[in-house]
Each structure stands twice: as C-alpha cells, then as structure tokens.
Length: 239
Image 1 (cartoon, one colour):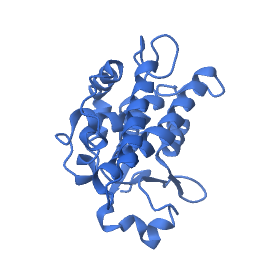
Image 2 (cartoon, helix red, strand yellow):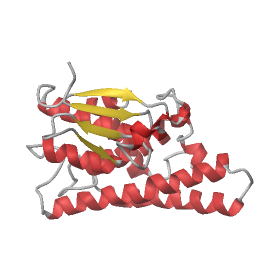
Image 3 (cartoon, helix red, strand yellow):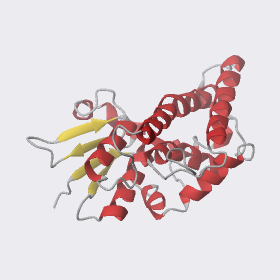
Image 4 (cartoon, rainbow, N blue to C red):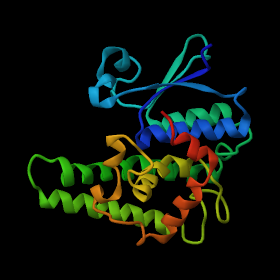
C-alpha cells in the first residue's frame, strides 16, 4: 500500500535534508502520522531531466516531494528548503522542530534557512567546480569561491559561539534551521566514509579547498552534536 508521501531523491546534501526531516518527524510523531515512500533518482543518467520529472519540478533537480493525500489531487513540492517548511507546517503540530508563526524565533529560523539556501550550497558548489571540474585552470575562480566557502563556515561558527543550535532563545533549539544546512557540513566532517555515491564523495571538504573544520570549532562541535541524533543517522541512509 502506498504511503502518504513520495520522495524523489538522491544521496546528496539537498536530498538528505528532506530525508532527515522526514525521519525526525517520524520519530517525534509516529509512522501512523507521517510516513513516506522513496524513489531513488540516478542523477548521473539525467533521469531528473526527463519530461515526467520536469512536470513535477520544472528546474529538473532533486529532491521533490509528492503529497499523495492532498485534496483534491496530489501536490508536489520542490526546492529542499520549501519542502522542509511544507513538512513542518503540516506535521509538526507541537512545534518540535519549528517556532510559533510570526514570532521572532521563527524569523531567526527563516533567516538561517535562507542563509544556507542562498550561500553555503551555491558557493561551495562553485568551489567544487573550479577546483575539480572546470575545463581550464582558473586560479581566480578557485580562490574566490574557496575563500567564500571558508567565510560562510566562519559565519556559522560566529553564530554558534555560546550556542548549541542556530535558532531559538538561550543556547537555541534544534530546528529546521539546523537540519537545512547540516548535510553540507556532515559531508565535510566525515568525507566519503559514510557515503558510497560519487556525488557525496566530491562534497568532502578537500574538494572545496577546506581540509578540516578545526578552524571552526563551534561549527565542528555543532556537527558532532547533530549527527548523534537517531533521526539524522536514519535520514542519511536514504535512499
């Protein structure tokens, strides 16, 4: 029997954001409240560019979530951060991973989501490209994007000084703000040891020109704290 949600995904940071969120929600609320099927997309064959997938996401990227129970017809959501917000607004009824709508804490959470979505992923991706895949050596490109990736790592490090999580009062509360950016840093801390796919190997920190997270101790401690969570561990095994 089909489950209420269908996730089209691949073992990449953006894919893992959503599977971690789904697993965290399952642990918090039970599989009788939220559960999902998974269809793995082999992005190396450009399956995500086929017409059936473009109908779900015109941008031709994973992940895509289909809510099969949505009425009057199934509803698809693309862009990883948008999927996370859709899930917490529908299923996180106790605010375990989010904050009250319209509150300052929610605003802070959204700020860090957008910081990650518009900064960490795109800039790190450019560093990977210029350092490993550009058809010609472009020293300016390599330096610019490696330096910017390091700067963004330090932004997180500054925010986490005296804090355990990105959003929330005091030391903060684990929320969508954290798990939205975590997979990028998890891959850098653990290299390819915990991932078997080529895509995840190239997301390891040497490919972005950052050898370790030792220069960012608050960020490193944050990563270690989060990857100990059962929901994070389970989500990283999907697909």
